[in-house]
Length: 339
Image 1: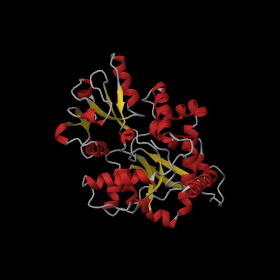
Image 2: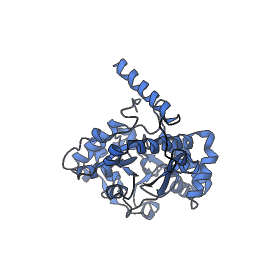
Image 3: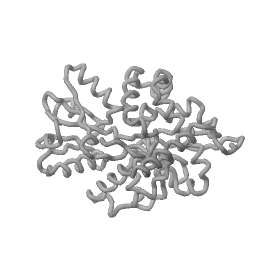
Image 4: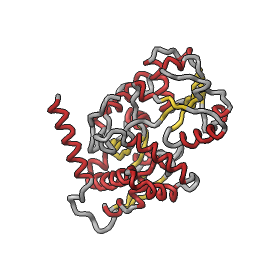
């Protein structure tokens, strides 16, 4: 076992050296034009993407990358299948659901090592010390969203029946939570947390966050995908893109680059004050690189398997897709410390 772990860490170290060194192959003089479709808008959750573009890392790797924001009507998976994009960002549940329907996609980079999805609540009104404290509470969930899957998996793991809680269907409007009609509300801790938390604190309210990851529910959030066809026929393009993207994420997560990173993000997201971006960036680091020995972008195969199992158990997919065969990044199965 010790030998296996040592070899694994050596492999990760050698891969890290490769990703931080000049490319070993020749680049074409004319840059490859590609489209990179995000899951959502350009904001702090896309810090490394923004940095790679603004710092010229894509151009240095012979790429002319158009970073496009995502949204409900801009599905990265569908655009990959239609040939409208070469790379995209999607959450694990979206990817697994698409694979179950026969999509030809592969995962090449995992952006978050810990899922930033949590539930915000008022600790002076709702005391949550362990999952059993959820009994009798009104819990916000997005029907059909990954937060619904996570919460139902957590309840089942904790022996709590759905009849013992009230699940409240949430939308983009936070009013029900502000009015304290819902006890716990799902948010992305690194993006919405600083904004919603600041508003409540300004009103004199205390806030806390319930994190499923601390209670054994390890699922995967956003990851970078490409089509199986591109990986098979243009592996050098995937190498070029991931090399540049990795440099961007490493630089963006480096504390000494904080002010530079904030300025780059602000140019892409001028609706968010720089001070808020600073708080979001600090939190994002904790989810992107929580462990010193695990490289940014590492693919956590065990968390992917758990996500797949949750979706199978909840009958969101008919049967397991065999997710391991679709995890094709440089770092796979990196050894993580016990959480």
